[in-house]
Image (cartoon, rainbow, N blue to C red; front, side, top):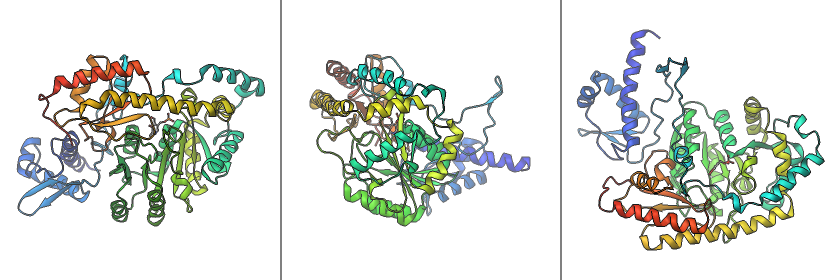
Amino acid sequence: MNDRKEKSGQRMRLVYDAVVEGIARREWKPGDKLPSVRIQSERLKVHRLTVLKAYRKLKDEGIIEVKYKSGYFVCRVPAAVPTPGAGIPDDRLHWDYGVHKSTVNRNRAMEFQSQSVEYQMSKALIDPKLLPNRYLSNHVRQVFDIYPKVLSTYSDVMGDLELREAMAGYFLQKHGIVAGADEMMVTTGAQQAIDLVSRSLVKPGDTVLIETPTYGPAIELFRQQNAKLIPIPISQEGYDLDRVEQIMNRHRPRLFYVNPTFHNPTGFTVPSPQRKRLVELAESYQCILVEDDINHDIYFECVPPPPLFFYDTEGYVVYIRSFSKYVAPGLRVAFLTARPPVMNCLVPMKALTDHGSPLLGQKIFQHYFFSDRLQAHIAKLRTALQLRKEKMEAQLAGTGWQWASPKGGLNLWIRLPEEITAESLLERCLNRSVAFLPGAICDPLGLLNNRIRLSYSFINEPQLEEGIKRLIAAADTLKGIDNTRGT
Ligand SMILES: Cc1ncc(COP(=O)(O)O)c(C=O)c1O
């Protein structure tokens, strides 16, 4: 590429990114008018034609629209907002070290999840005191007795065969899922499974559907592939499947990342009839459904419906089942199940990544998970978590804040009063040794500024009582002060 062309492309990208960043920061909200071409060119010190080119590109991508004689406006439902700066070579180098600047966005959740606060409600993790740690340690010793050479060898790339066969039997018995050990891969947590899927199945420019709100790190993984993300709202009733069908028809997405059972962060569960129809849509539009199922066994009332994978006859569902949270978080064992055409794309990436998850953890998991004692423990764990959830809800009862009481999972997803933003509340809470997750982290567009995720699973009931008291006190200091509300 000649120098002039390259510079002109960079200038165009500058304008493009300025708009995308402005939308993500909510400087311009859906329906808002953008600065005119003239004003934008003066502001960014570029030629008007450059602005025009950037606006055209944004329009073609369905992010902004042009209204006759009125100017340019942010689309009411932006089709997809890419990562600012995505896909362009980063010429800003850390010359000090001779390495490129990281292209991974800062993980904001990790920043305050790693802060040592007394009342930690930002981590959707289970209190280690609720897990049978002594029992697990005994198992570890037994595993060394049964497999004295367990540390002297690698696992298969797809995972230990005995474990995969045992899990295939479990899925059949529990969910009626028929999948062989050769259609199952052991991964290092669901996180690695989503990463493998995004790196193996998504090419730059592909469209990916993703729930809003959703699990924040999944947003970043698909962004890393330079995918165009289209947010699909999830509600207590599930998805608006007519809208999903329109979007599939129009955008032909590569995949749809879903967390339909005790969804993180809302706790919603997509009902069975919707599951069946969603799978049919995926098959009709050849869109892979990536089903992330991390909370399946954490239900408080009824057993949830079978996974989407159960309804799939054509191989369009990739089923990711993690036991990380409630069995043994330190082992990081999860299972990815997919039919051979998809699995064959994923195995080479797993081999490149780590040659297979460590064998020791898999063997410990196998003996621990299928033991009667652990299965009985999961039942007790549900009761303990339900009590914590009820405690948190009782403490919040007088606030007037809104949430749908979850029937499973680890979190409350709360809508704050209009005048309070999650960010300002978090700042005041951290000063009081309280942490929670601000909703914007869970939204592909970075909106949802007056939603928060409160996890009731990590701290005990007396701590929940005090933590919520402090949270409410922090919110009281903001009443009538903060007018920068979100949607
Ligand atoms: C929806 C969702 N998917 C994946 C993960 C990562 O799970 P794992 O610990 O198995 O990597 C989490 C963790 O919180 C999650 O909430």
